[in-house]
Length: 184
Image (tube, rainbow, N blue to C red; front, side, top):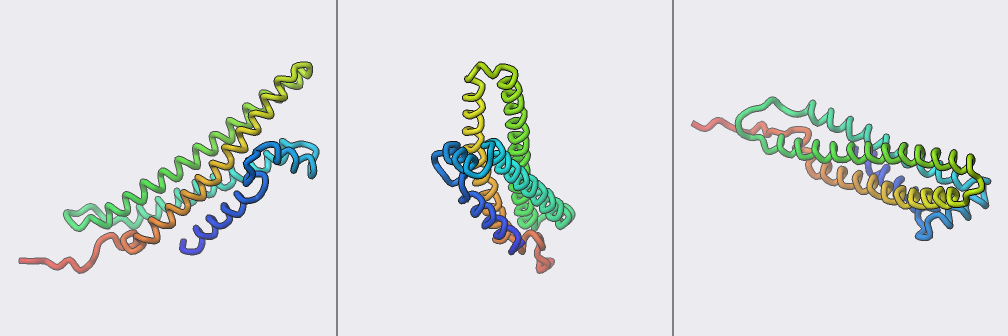
């Protein structure tokens, strides 16, 4: 945990800084890079989206694993001395929010590919209508923007989780202190 999450944050930051995600001109630089290295700008965008999908799956898996681990460390319900359990529950909520973010990103990736496939199919059926090419271009341009946002959201979520977990590590592992003496 102490090394894994910071490594993921650094990896996401590095990937975000790579072109075309780091540019403000969005798809124009994407197209330039794609045309210089490949025949289809869609292939470059597909690589970006697939990488984002992989990162979302990682976040979903990590959050699910940590939720399970924390829940297994929760003591049975008892009267009093529940501050540590409350901290565990708050962290579980944050992890569930991270899992929801990842699931949303995965749905968006699927929706993007479905919409793009429909548009490409229509543009091939009607090659005489140039508006389909423009719509596909706009869809790709918007998706680069969404990918930028999603990469930063995943990175920021990992940073938040690392912060909250590392600050509360003792309460996660031992939610109740053993030094509660009986007073008569």
